Length: 155
Image 1 (cartoon, helix red, strand yellow):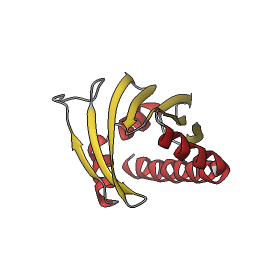
Image 2 (tube, one colour):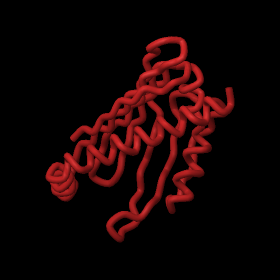
Image 3 (tube, helix red, strand yellow):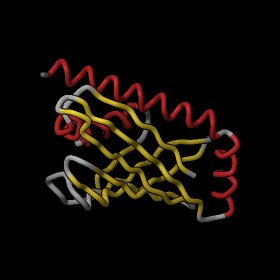
Image 4 (cartoon, one colour):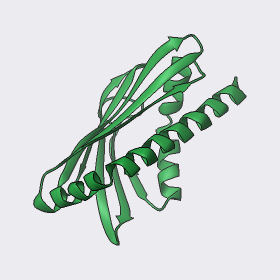
């Protein structure tokens, strides 16, 4: 099952990519929302091999998510492998320079069930796909707008 969204940001591609590399900021954001995030790699710079363990509550149960950066092509693309109990997937961010001051940001989340219970979960997502896709696109649009505002303030 795939969710995707595309938004244009009024900022240069290198600035957008730099903002997307604020992994510590994303960790803090997840923690503010109740998740427990642990970085589990020895890397000192952003790149392939970065890994996180994320624990969060969903549907009344504690869930564990493994996240690994598997492709890092600055300033064009980042791809993360995602694994949880019974579900695996990829999350990709692709940037395309439209001009010197505009960047198209494309995000895609693709999940694949591995177990019967995960298949039932994904099937329930399929039934609500249109509303979930709208929410996904709305969150991406909100993030892009906030990113654009932050980058314009710092310019």
